[in-house]
Length: 264
Ligand code: ADP
Image (tube, rainbow, N blue to C red; front, side, top):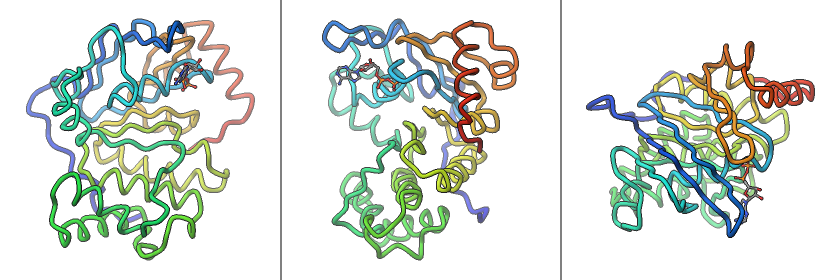
């Protein structure tokens, strides 16, 4: 891959966390999905969130740009508190890129248009500048030659790389990934992880829900393990994988590593 920067990550003016989550609680009706979650993410940090299915990982990541609404606790992004102020939420959402398991590209728009429309519609960027920026990012994820195709003409791995480029077009300060490779055929996982590794190397602040433990080992500053709506353990990768403290983490790692989950 080329070495041109994939993003324009702002240098933090101070050492305040980019994301600050304090005593967050969320219920779906009576079901307590997130229990007293606290987590600080500093500028440039790469956090991998893992845990069994249904443990609340996706809910947590979706709370960060209020795709899910929490009921208790506080959530700050770039120093702004998420509450019911719509203007503030719009501002926060513009700084938070999100990449989902399913790519959510507009099927009726070309790859290029998928990448320019959010810029022109949401950021008010001039068409020519939006195209230039989109093409540079498509280049970066090695998809420039497909700019005029439609998502349905591309493989899952290619669509996910475009989804990442599209999110980066918004010049985010932090990127959230929610199992970006879990819907992909095995041979396509590496190409998407490679883009994510590059992004991490360039200093993008990232929170990634993933089962790709090789990626976690290689890239994460901290691995956060969730189970039943709680953060059970968080540690740097070496400690997390080689000396997990909690029996629940140990059990999870035994299961996931025994089942040969792919490595980056
Ligand atoms: P994970 O990402 O770890 O698999 P989720 O955050 O998707 O877990 O889900 C956590 C729990 O919340 C699960 O038990 C799930 O069934 C429940 N849940 C998720 N979304 C909803 C929803 N929209 N309504 C009701 N329950 C939900």
